[in-house]
Amino acid sequence: MAQKPKHEFGGPWTEIKLDAISEYLDFYQNALKNRGFETWYVDAFAGTGERHAKTVIGGIFDNAPVEHVEEVLAGSARRALAINPPFSHYWFAEQRPTRVKALEALREEYDAEISIRRGDANEQLRLLFASSPWENHRDHWKQRAVVFLDPYGMSVGFDTLKMLAETKRVDVWYLFPRKAVIQQLSNKVSRIDQDKRASLNRIFGCEDWEERFYKAQPAQHTLFGGPVTPESVRMATGDEIAAFARERFGEIFDFVSDPIPLLINGRDFFELYCFSNNPRAFDLIKKGVNHVVKKYTPASRQRSDP
Ligand SMILES: C[S@@+](CC[C@H](N)C(=O)[O-])C[C@H]1O[C@@H](n2cnc3c(N)ncnc32)[C@H](O)[C@@H]1O
Image (tube, rainbow, N blue to C red; front, side, top):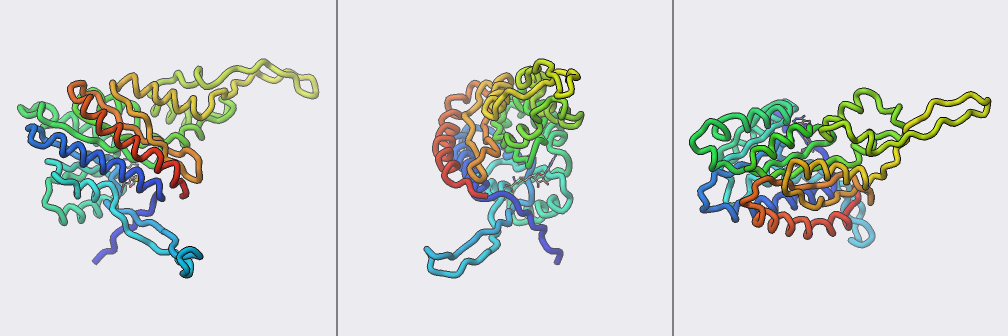
């Protein structure tokens, strides 16, 4: 039998992220049961369904030798499949073929309606929400989804968020890659090459970031007297950059949660947000989301080691 691919990623902060999502999924399914909706769990960066993690056990406090062990933990897909009551539909997208195979094997274990798509998350989401039953179906109004966007880096286009907002029927949990975005924003604007610029435009959905983050410095003279061309330098702090992203999300979603900060070695790496654009459900959504954010924010600050 072919060996399952190992998917090694994350650390304690990953468990916090997955605990927060699972708790919301549980809340959502219980809040929406018996209301006549068809509920979807949409995981656009699904991985394999599992997570291989290396942990250290033992040490002086346990009075045992230190050992490095590998654990297999449930990833987002497997955790979602364990929610009770179950979702009416599960939809997973993944780019890597070996991981798609692992998801197909996972599907065999469950008696649930599971669709698996191979390809880019942005493209696949667009196809899902433009097709039946989300469109051109007499039951389109019944469809509700929680969409989880869990990329490694800057793979989610702002256009994708906008498309999701326009459905007005989905709640989106988005792992915003704060550190990766800040890293693209070099101190001098001249250092931002075309590729970086394109990925920043894509993630913010605009070009205004340059004006907001950079200020032209007056021309200076070198030691040898020659003038140096004026240079635009980044004045915005990490928090200001993150606040700009949040402002952008607020332009397309009516509800934007406080983010759960996810730290590695005490430094902000990601921010986990929930967005919604379904005004009739706001009170309910806010109740569930605010509970989750309040519960997991302190945990994320305490357990930040990699
Ligand atoms: C952080 S992992 C997801 C982990 C998963 N949510 C879990 O908890 O088990 C990100 C996954 O997205 C996949 N990926 C990366 N870029 C992608 C893209 N543009 N579209 C779809 N999947 C992508 C990677 O192969 C990887 O498996």
